[in-house]
Length: 228
Image (cartoon, rainbow, N blue to C red; front, side):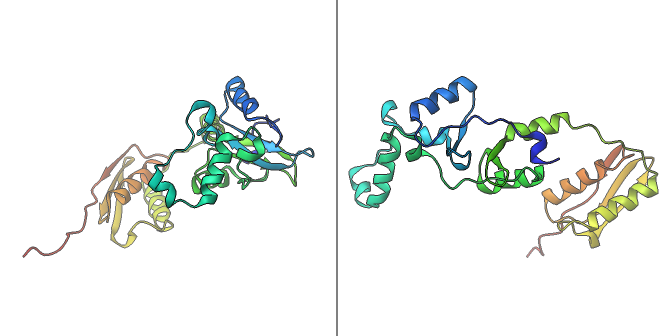
């Protein structure tokens, strides 16, 4: 699936000269936690999130530092914090370096952007104009509504062959020390693993093969070293 398949459109937006109070009211009215900022041509120029409105003078939540800490804080940082907590215009509080994607971006790409940049939504831009937005909730919705794949149970030998081939294609397992046997759909995995994470990943890989009824994980950790 692509971003265009799950994105929300049209998008609720504000202008740079919109007021901070208007943004707060939009958050409450539409039950959203962020809003893109666009110019008069519809081009994305920023985004405002709940985090940008966290420290505000109206709520008496502006950033406060002790007198000795202010001495060691750059004056530009202090000025920027003041502007963000006191300004009435969106242009002064919005984040201008916005991570965005194209409508053709895959959901895997969108998820990677969210994880890499620790963000909760990705605006979708089509050669200039903002055309949609994808949030974490939209990815969960796509997961919940995805049709189940058609799985034809495999024979024991086919299960073994597919499992070993799949694990050899992964970068994490120690396949030279791994083996599997299959009897009536029950997979026994044998060998050495170097972490609990590897052990569990091998089990999950086996469970995802059509025809597998159960997995017996007999893998063990290597000895730490000789005892003196």
